[in-house]
Length: 223
Image (cartoon, rainbow, N blue to C red; front, side):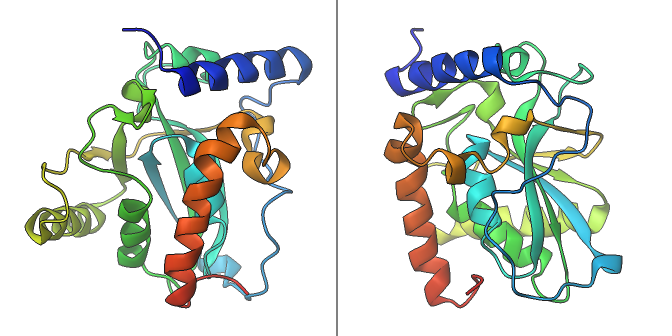
């Protein structure tokens, strides 16, 4: 199947980026471009959760706006190759999904609330794709760390299926968390550094605005 136009443009642009930037595979990812946080978090009791919901530029940008989130980092999980590169993941042959690892303070934002945000940000009934981004690397997936997280995710999926919001069933994969690999440095805070890049202006920007309107009205965003 031919790669859809937006997905093709995105991959070509990122290929050119990798020719100019040094990869940070295997190193701790930083996110200097994320919005400044005003809320004081309990740094000694942060927890992490890993979600995949299509292009990680969209997911990471939104989660970094939430109260109670210390940082959301773009990366890869669910595959069989150590230290995968973006180009390798894009082939679909490593088994990884584009994911975001979210560090959060459970006293400020709960796991259930993070699940609510996750399902708002993408269409969980689309199998191995999100819009024009097609491939197993764009699959909807929740990587749980224990039975409690798994049960809460299953309950959220059952509630969403019963709501009638979608005509199809939720296909979100539930997988035991094994390893998170931070993506290359240029992916971190990508939208905030490149809002006028074609994919960002056409896809990421509108999604962030929709997210800000909804969760801003609920009071979940940093001021």
